[in-house]
Amino acid sequence: MRRFQPILIATALTSIALAADFELKVSKEELNEARVKLLPLHQKLGKPKRGEWLAEHEERGQTFDQYLKSDTIKPWGLRNTIYIQPIGEFSTEQQQVLDETVSFMKIFFGRDVIVQPALRLELIPAKARRIHPQWGDEQILTSYVLYEVLNDLPANAAVGLAFTASDLWPGEGWNFVFGQASLRSRVGVWSIYRNGDPAMGDAAYQLCLRRTIKTAIHETAHMFTMLHCIAYECGMCGSNHRTESDQRPIYFCPECDMKICWATQQKPLERYEKLLKFCRDHGLKAEAEMYARSIETLKK
Ligand SMILES: [Zn+2]
Ligand SMILES: [Zn+2]
Image: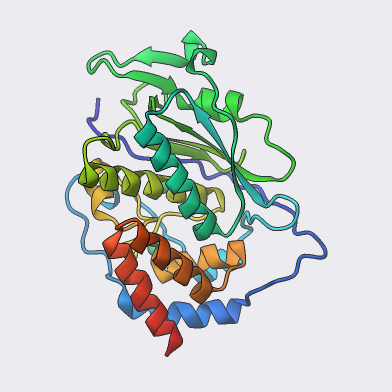
């Protein structure tokens, strides 16, 4: 059994109908111009090291232009809200990490993010739980969460995401996953379990917040039909293990980030100003620096 397991994605596509009266707030041309301006700020991916995602997975990548031309899921029209379903109990600090992640998601996706009342862990049946045979971790089966817990999304849901403090495993042959998404059903799940204990001081809290935000936006972006990035150091790069995911930034490269701006119809400059404020307020230094440089570049 492999020690580390990647974050999974499904690749089935579905589309959300564009409401007839939906008014575009940003144009493709405007976003393309921003993409070209911002690209020089970003670092290209080097050759993958042994054991890293791209050393083991053949990925085709997806440019901004390809995204525009493909049939993508966007939170347009009626289905415009992100729902989060907490499962199980959270410590005070874990709850704070979730609350702050929700605040970040609201800005990143420019959408309402509604957190529903937590579901008790006991409601997950024995067939969807296990103790890891070697490590002893208590785990929840991701497919049960995706297809049984999240099977009845509200009418205005763009996507539904479950969030848990329990470890996740995706079934036979796997050890664990940090998160998993199903594009066909517009649902995902992610866990704080392997993100470190946020009660162990400021540095541990920061690390936990950073990891939790990273998985939340990565999985949600997959649900807006975004594929992995193969070009830049970017939050949409695939990760085979923790060391690899820790070295990736929260921010997306312009090729990927303009897809978010298109899908969520946000103006890059206004969005970066809000993201910069969040990152400064929460000590996310590398991200704050990138957003500050992006603002400066876009203003030129
Ligand atoms: Zn992924
Ligand atoms: Zn990217």
